Image (cartoon, rainbow, N blue to C red):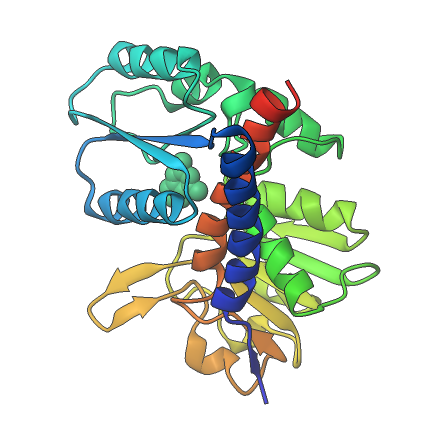
Length: 284
Ligand code: GUN
């Protein structure tokens, strides 16, 4: 039997916590957090994600700002928008939807975001705080994975964890968060020889490779907890990085795609926006 680690109840738990704090703040002080999402171009998947983020922010009573730029905007134009948002006192969190179009310097844009408003946790200060296990804003999907595992009471300390993928958005921060929770962590990437052999050592296998169906049954230790971060639209529907048919009945627990990690990412974005607001306004 494989347990389905559905994201919705865990995400609702995070979101409800944020909503009640926002409600309380509005009643006491009349102010609420503001989240700005910057979208450059018209990538269809990004359009869907941005719409979801807007809806989620409004649903918990936050202000939501959408900044849209043309696909052929240069780096300078995107930096100007970020500068304006950095200065705007009604904006407490800034997220620039990735990927940015070719020709825009993504690193320059991300590093330009005021560290206090860096709700994606991708800036150098946020990353440094993560490495050093100090308070700071963490990448939403990575912290969502840990909260999902905690919600389902999956023990982390002393367990073997393997993370497939080393992106700054997911793989790398997830590996660090697992390490800070005293898991023993290995990271597999595109240059790793015999990846299945290493993956099979995992009690907890987190797959964030961005490759549909990469992980087959031979990568999975029987009864392992498998977290599939991938989400891909294919002719046969939405699939993850793990071949779902091969995980069900073999893994001990598995996150469905869609409906597993996805809902956590947005809930954590709201949580980060609340944290950013608190640092800038409530505590400041
Ligand atoms: N594109 C896909 N996922 C993400 C995310 O978590 N943050 C940003 N900024 N862009 C993304």
